[in-house]
Image 1 (cartoon, rainbow, N blue to C red):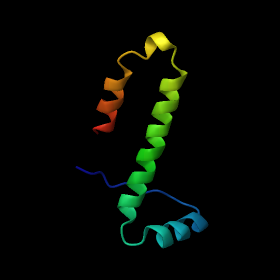
Image 2 (image 1 turned 180 degrees about the horizontal axis):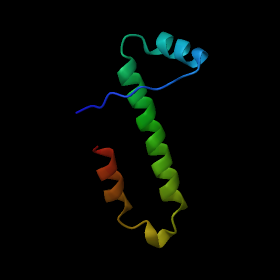
Image 3 (image 1 turned 180 degrees about the vertical axis):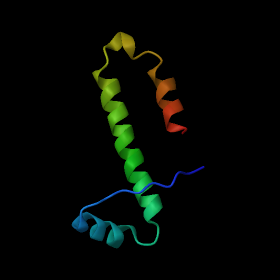
Image 4 (image 1 turned 30 degrees about the vertical axis):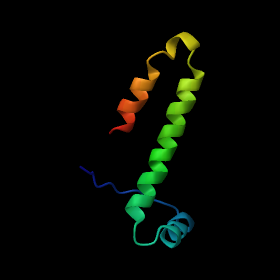
Length: 66
């Protein structure tokens, strides 16, 4: 399942995105957003106290399945 979204990008970024992603812009943007979300999840996990990290692997895997 997918959701259509509209985003507003500065002209320079939109031009570079078109040139870099080519015809498969949806896939490119999806991979970029997924990578950023995973980076944020990992940073949040890293900042948790060690005793709160237990079981976090299951949370991480569940959020990545979406």
